[in-house]
Image (tube, rainbow, N blue to C red):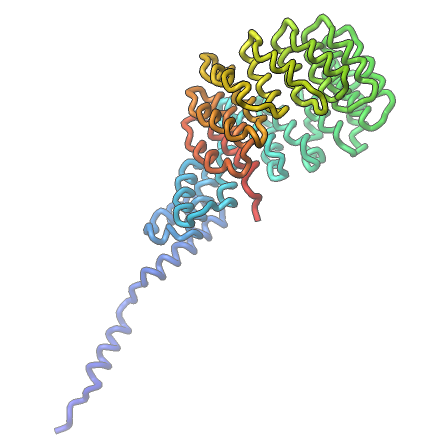
Length: 452
């Protein structure tokens, strides 16, 4: 009798296993799903990519690379709130900020409002893009030039005007034909800071435009390129009886830092029209002389609050002169907004916070949102020695019930704290108001590190 073949059961078992359908290992399936979602993302099929990602288990999704993919997918789908939630979870895993991803999330909160039905919200979004001052904003600003609102188009044009690449944009030049005066002026203001002489033929016909602001802005461009007619026209406009002509020309001459502007500013500071006096007060900040200080001190007692505000702001900007005494006296101004701007000027001059801590608290507790917003903006002028006190006041204002006050506080916090304000600004992305979240996103774009 032959001995039993001990290998036969093993062979049979091996054959059965080989013939059975292989169950895909969990890890292999997960890897396949990740690859699938990445491929869908690359093909811009973002909804399908998200559906695949949502099927992943929590442990796999917690992997930083996978979480980043989901964040970016959510942003492409226009859902920055969900992206922020996932970013917060990414930070918990990393135990640190991922500033590159945070930058993308912040931009998402801005871009989602550029197509909003509400003009005010689109305005908030394009204000954030305008204040970003980064070439990365150019495609979005160019899109804004097609907005149905002239105000929004003007914001987009102003943003492009601040960037060399933006001023060279074909769409920016085409905006010179826009029907809105504000847009035309914004484009011309951009040309006035350019060194591209090819714009001259585009600008010269606008010297005969029906709108005075356009004519003045065109003259400013030509003055920038040393065309005699442009500079001569500006000085003529700056002495014109029409207040609009005079005001626009004064601002243009100040921007050009033109010699001979001081006598015009001194004369205009006594003009009967408040708008002219206000323009003169603003311009005097750019001619640091004893005569300017004297005129501004006088304007600090002007009958109208807007003129007094302009004078206070300019005194705060002057260096090399003792301007604290008149500003301290103005802390007793009868108009609360004026007092707020005086505080900002004193902060800019480095005055000790204790001097005006009482007025800050009083203004912070006033019932007028515009005043609370003004004091929030004023606190943004705090220097190193006053930063801690200003920060404490801003932390209260950012909890205000009115969005415009929170917006002002967010901007000031970013201004005085820079990168250190990231935790605060990130928390503001969770605000209930769309415009506040967009402002926080815009502020973060300015303080987080650029993409690698």
